[in-house]
Length: 377
Ligand code: KG4
Ligand code: ZN
Image (cartoon, rainbow, N blue to C red; front, side):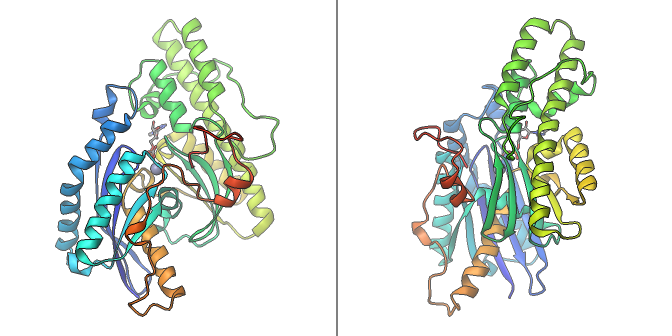
């Protein structure tokens, strides 16, 4: 059955609204996907300021929704054709999550539509299906400024976390090291441009968690080592470029090592011919990271799939699709007759922390002690 969903995303520094439709034949169509990036507002502080982010979401969300609805209407899908509303309900910066979720609740209430609270990570996990017909199960490496995880995606709502970062995400490491080197924010693209002029073999950097057999990541030691080298040995533009190249190579190397381990675990469970290895998140834009992961996939017998960058970084189309897939399943399971409530409704809660694989997060917490440092995702 055809379904059309309005999606809302506001968990970090991008406000986004989209309309996505899945036809009777299962084909997915993004009817609109509008994004307002707050990057200039945060650049002066060298990172995202939660309070500024939340205010900016409030200021822009109405206009963005109007724009997304107008674009969909131009393609012949008016507001009356929308069957449900999906919004990111976490994990993320809580002020921002509350803005998007409250907007979605208001919209759902005014139109009498069901509301689905979506886990932002589930949006990333399924985003590849906006453009590629990737069957379940598949292996996902999610690498962005906020997340660094290897996930075994068995199906909608069925995820196993194979590894996650015990401190910083890979994108965060790019950003923080770039900041130390005076390269501005966001640091990833700037560091990549510098690295292109440098020698990756010039500086030796630590290889974190080498002795461990799991698929977890760690980038804080690299950050400290890079800061020390920057202070003591970086005197010329060439030194800086060399350090950037060495850092980029070290980040890529850890992503490759952990992904290789996850690929072997995946193959041991499923066997299979050429399962998909999906790489999503802003760091997937990095050419060195991309080419090394693609070479690894080829070596290990996986098909390398990277969604277009617009769907790799934060967007609302992926939230609409995750909501759509979830709603379709809930409806089928409840033998929908129009009266039963098969959605989260207005009681959906905004959650700053919300692991996608709750079972794993509880049985093997990354931060063993409670308090402020509980696992972000
Ligand atoms: O997925 P994304 O847009 O937002 C979230 O963090 O959820 O990812 C942004 C991150 C930033 O840390 C940024 O520095 C990094 O992706 N990034 C890159 C590149 N482009 C973006 N890192 C390395 N090389 C790049 N070319
Ligand atoms: Zn994200």
